[in-house]
Structures are given as C-alpha cells and as structure tokens.
Image (cartoon, rainbow over all chains, first blue to last red; front, side, top):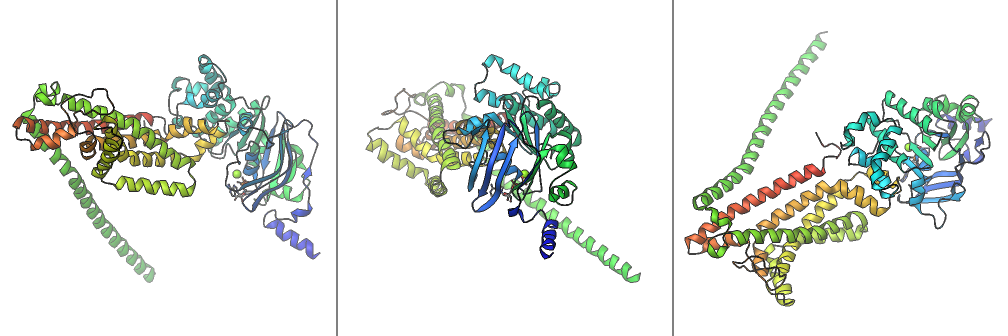
Length: 281
Length: 298
Ligand SMILES: Nc1ncnc2c1ncn2[C@@H]1O[C@H](COP(=O)(O)OP(=O)(O)O)[C@@H](O)[C@H]1O
Ligand SMILES: [Mg+2]
C-alpha cells in the first residue's frame, strides 16, 4: 500500500518510476531491421544519459521517437551515426548494428557510417554558400558524380524535396534568403544527395510554421519508400500522422515501442499512456 | 479614490522626471558622439589635406615613370608592391596556419602559450624586429641586405594580426555548420577546408588587409634588412637592395636637394593612397566572400 503511494507520487513528477525493475514493453517483433541497438548505454562524463536501449529500426518505415525533454532522444539519435563521438566525456557501451554490422566496431570508419546514415537538425543549418553548392556539398566531397553531372544532381535533389520551382532561377543566391521551411527542405535535399540508407531527423519541424511543417511531413512520407527514417518529435500529432513505429523514451530508457496504432491506442505501460495524453512532459 | 488619484499624480510626475533625465542623457550622448567623431575624423582630413596639398604643388607625371635616381618614384612603387606580395604569401601562410592551429588543434595549454607569444610579438617595436633580423639574417646568415630578410622582418611584424583574426573568425563559425558537414560524412580536412575556412574567409581577409596596410607603412625594419637603392627589384632574393616608398618619404624629406624633398611629398601621398586602396579592396573582398553569409544584407 505504502509503496504504491510512493510510486504514484513519483509518476506524477515525471516518469520517475522504479525503472530499474521494468523492462520495456515491445509490441511486436520486427524482422530485418535496418538498424538495431543492443543494450546501448551512453553517458557524458559521470552522468548517465541512456541506459540499456534495445531498439530495432524498421526498414523503409518512419520510426518516431517521443518523450519528455531531457529523456535522451537526441543523444540516442546522434549515436546512430556516431555524431556523439567527439563530444566531451562521451562514453558508450552496447552495440549499434547497421545492416548487422556494429558501427562502433573496430575498423569501422565513422565517415562511411555518416555517409550511409544522414542527419537533419532541429534548426535548418544551410552552409554559407550558394543554394546549388549546399545541395552538392556532400556529392562533391565524395566525388559521387562527374563534374558535368553536378547540375543535374542539384536539380534532381531540389525537385525531390519540392524546392525546385522556388529556387530554379536563383541557384547562386544565398540560402539564408529562403524561408525557414525552404531552408529545412534544402538541408533535406543536401542530406539526400549523398544517397543515405537511413535518415535521422531531430525535431526537424519544431522551428517551422504549420504550412512548412506539412510540406516536410508530406516529403518524409514520400521518401519512406526508399529511405528508412528515425524522427525525434515533440509533436505527438505529427508522430501519429507520419510514423509507422513509435518509441517512447523517458529518463534515458526506452519504455515502450511498437506500431504507432498500438502504442497510441493501447499502450502497455501506464506512463506511456500518461505521456501520450499529455499529462506530463 | 483620492489616494489613487494622488498616487497616479506621483506616478505621472516620476514618469516626467525620468523622461526629462532621459532626454538629458540623450543630449549628452549625442554631443559626446559628435565630439568623438570629430576627434577621429579631423586628424584624418588634416593628414589627407596636408599630404595632398604638398604633393600637388610638386607633382609631375614623369615621377611615375622615372626611378628615384632621376627624380621619379617608379622603382619605389614597384619595390613596395613586391614587398607586399612577399608579406601576403609569407605572413598569409604562416599567420593563417597559426590561427587555424590555435583555433582547431592546440590543446588548451599550448593555445594559451601561443596566444601569449603572439601578443608579446605584436608588442615588440618594429625597429627591434628590424635589428634582430639584421643581426640574425643579414649578418648571421650572410644574406646581406636582401628581399627575403625584409619580407621576413615585415612578416614577423604582422603575423600576430593575421593569426588573431583567423583564430577569431574560425571560433565564430557556428557549430551547426560543422555538424551539418560531419553528418554528410565529410572528414576533418574537408570540414575545415570546405566549410569552416570558407565561413571564416571574411574575417581572414580583414586580417590580411590590416597586415598589408601595416606593412605598407613600415620603414624601420626595412632600413635594417633592405637598406635602399635607386634600382628595381632584380629578381635576387639575397644580396640585393631596391627602392620602396617609405624610405623616400622618411629619408628624402631630409635631403638638401629640393627635388628629393619633392619626391618625399609625393611618396607620402602615394603611400596614403595605397593604404586607402588596400582598405577599399579589402572591403570589396570581404563583401564578395560574405555574399552567402548568414545575415549578409542584399
Ligand atoms: N554533450 C553533452 N554533455 C553532457 N550532457 C549532455 C550532453 N548532451 C546531452 N546531455 C544530457 O543528456 C540528457 C539528455 O539530453 P538529450 O539527449 O538532448 O535529450 P532530449 O533530446 O530528449 O531532450 C540531458 O540531461 C542533457 O543534459
Ligand atoms: Mg533533443
């Protein structure tokens, strides 16, 4: 009786449950995930940030990661393409497998990992160079096509994200004269141009207006046919609209994961239900 | 009711008083601004006016074609440009390299050490640098008066400025650019060369402009390392002397012949014009390199 009361109180203050005793609720088995983490545990210095995350990422689907601020979503996402490697105090144990190969394994080149697993950030971050050079930045570095084909690549990629009509006449302009939404689409085109297998998106629409958000969402839905995606979002309605799979993180742990419908309609853990109903976070 | 009215009146009065003191403060700051502007601009016009006036009286076109041997400045102008080119290459390479090293790779302790050394170096009087270059290079390495010694002495003088502006420009490159580049699978070299240095270019160009403007105006290190001659640069790097403008402005002015004194006046004008041209060119280049920068207008 007494312990229930304490648990209740802790629950109200966040999702601070007796977490050590729980295992995440996983709704269904995924065969053939493109990425899968095994006991992924991350800390910065002595501060633990993620503990024992086991999460498969479905191929050619959109996986949404939701959870309160500070629950480790960004840290998790960045560990999937080794963007955390250089951060001060970064410590990791556990594995992240990309197509069955541990990306933190000996002899794995993080540059190759990042080329295969691209990333789009919370705030649009175009480079200070022309719109064309932005799209082609990665393509040129990796010498992916002959020089003569660069113009075509730029057009294809800009068309792919739906930006071509808006920028066709001003490819040499500064990207900062585009609207925030257009800048984010440009960053998407830049990431897609190096032909990644997986795209990681960290709250890609949180700084955008509703119309731009809709454009980005429509694009992500179209892209799912050829790129697997993991998107962190604070916007639960967005997760519901576009995600095939949802993973709920809290206090550095994966609490629950599964098909979007199942997680939203019949969450297996009480704290998932509470978060999804907006009771905390 | 009454107390409310009273307090409102007090409030009103207080507001009026702050409005008054604000107006007073505005007046003061405006007059101080005007005064500062005047103190800054007056000497500039005084120098420009004086130099132009003196030079105009004695100006003749053949000064641009004759050498200092025959009452012209041609060799001195060419010599100054050669020195500038040398400084641009040497101080540019070393200064930008140091700046990149300090900003990107140095461990904190070494960074402090290098910054400190650079600051001390920028405080050493140019005549001392000239003297050291004389002892070490002209005499010590037996280069004689030479172009290399002169370029090195001038470079040592301006490297701190180039390094500092490079370091600052690099440290101001947003992390989001680097992360965007990393996320495309770019290696450190590509991130630095294609993204970071490119973003820092306006700041680096500004530093180089300042370095060149300082070099144009230096005399002391050149007296020790280059001496002076009426000739053009002869293609040799060591055991050679040539003409340059600051020498003409500094030494000829004191010569007995009025032709030489006239040359000094014109050399002074050419020097001022050269500095102005450098600054304008620098601005143009900064504008050009900034055309895709965040926050660049138009
Ligand atoms: N580079 C870092 N150094 C130290 N602590 C960090 C770093 N990045 C994140 N953290 C900590 O890890 C926790 C999770 O952060 P984050 O992954 O950004 O959460 P979320 O994206 O879910 O809001 C936070 O408590 C944050 O302070
Ligand atoms: Mg985050």
